[in-house]
Length: 480
Image (tube, rainbow, N blue to C red; front, side):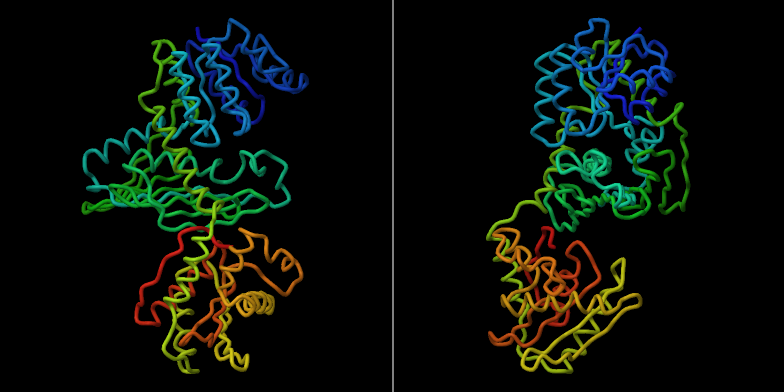
């Protein structure tokens, strides 16, 4: 009989305890937390012999055969290492840790102490995931070329800061939902990622949304994670002969396969629930004295963490070279002349390209010589507030001679324009771009309505097209 201890008594611990009751040869022995009253309530719902106010007390109990860590993300590494040093096998709620460095430390500790550790990446253990592996290996969709993953939900802003999910240390959508995306990508694509493009929104040090495209040795991946929108939590695996959609990536039971044979749906229900299969696998490893899971290896969890670290670096680390790249865009996307007819042509291209995005925009092009608006278009749902935003973005361009994205990045690095925030006129964010002709600024192109730096992208993409697909340097990091 494996006597389990659960470290932490929150919602996830309740779900684990409920599922554990289905595993023969295992029993809930102890629970630890900070609040005796809360522990008593937990033990009433899920009977156990011991309730410890303090996690160390649980680890010092020699009757504990295995532990499940159900703590906030930022605490995983600390208590995983402590448990491993007590030679207690550890099943740890995902993510194993908040960084590659911490994840490596856990793996090294597990190896050093000859003790099993496994990240609780439950989608890898449910029945339908085995079917996914089988059909991919059988070549049902040919060679994998692209993996698109999404894990987003709308977190009410009034709930912000009330849970560890929305705290700068250990919080954010990437660690909460993006880890599921990283796990699938890690499992299917080889080599180290090269980051192609990142869009993100951060608030008070917490990533509320990010979408990153990466290139691997055998294909391209996209990873989307957010607290600010409800979109299907699916994955799309595209191959040379077809595709597979994994429905509900974090709790999969259904696959939709499309290839030359047509379309078919495969459904494989859980064994009891979405937690059970990983518990059963881990319990078998403990009984067999195994030191590592062949399904969720140490290298796999390290690689997941490396992917998320890389994405975070795309919206947290900037230097002067990034500023120079934005300046280079302005030099590359200059024109030989610019007339009112050119403004109409360019504005129409921007409006057409805006249809590729998930929301509408306002577009304005102002001539510098007399501050005359020579093109303006408002999509449905846009109003005077968007024009006010564009006024601020335009002011950034006129004051600095560079794009408003450049001004935002300059402020991020040096805090040079901090006094511009909050006055309702100036706006430090992407969305305004200077058009130079023979070294002289002739117009300011403005877009408002998109997020995550896509205003800036829409402008430079459209300018390139207007300039007969003139190549330009791509800015891959997050822009304000």
